[in-house]
Image (cartoon, rainbow, N blue to C red; front, top):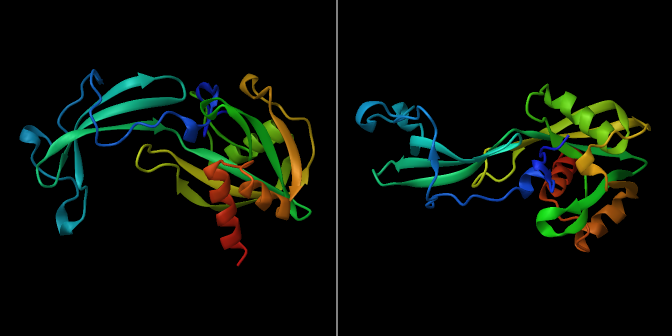
Length: 233
């Protein structure tokens, strides 16, 4: 499923991290207000949520609006107020979480390769994606689905590695990371946007070389590998 998913039907489909970044704390002219949006602080905008004990938000949402929306993502533009009373706007991508799977066996990993429209080239990465609109389930369910759809592999063992935010300055999306083992082969069930996808197994040493050679540039793939290395200590 597209998710880290595919934005706009497909990272030309484009992967979630590849969605257009909305720079924070900047003007986004012409943003449409969400119907019924109101001052998050109540009348006069007074009061900071969770302020007791010195904890709470350092930036308060005054109004929120949607600049663009499709079945995969929203581009939001909010009016905000900071603790010192200064005001501004913040644009960011509102997107559902995704799952990434490291299919590991025989001292190496299974990777997938496809054309990434935003960067205009093909790259290798671990299988990953998110639920489309109207569908959902647990992170584990999504991880198994992505693995089987993109590679045809089914995992007897799935171990959670952790959760990371994708780009916390430009999006609220995060990723659930897993390593899969005791793999059983089967036919992939790729979506239309993945019709150009290929897959292959690489030994770990070659995987690391591919990073240095620029064949693997996906930040989520590298983040997943870092979590795996930490878990192996």
